[in-house]
Image (cartoon, rainbow, N blue to C red; front, side, top):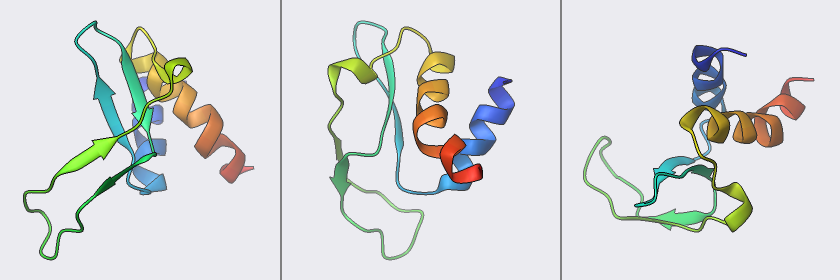
Length: 77
């Protein structure tokens, strides 16, 4: 699957997920968190995510693929 296809899958889900990096260079896509709801999007918001250790991946591509496999692929079947 190409990076473009992974990004398109992420765009289609639209469920408030976040692509996150840490200071050690790991990447994750998380759907666990909270934020204030923007009344007039786009506008400034405060967001907090929870990432389980197993969700951290060494590359953006691997993080997107893991998210796609768990959250998108099953919905498209």
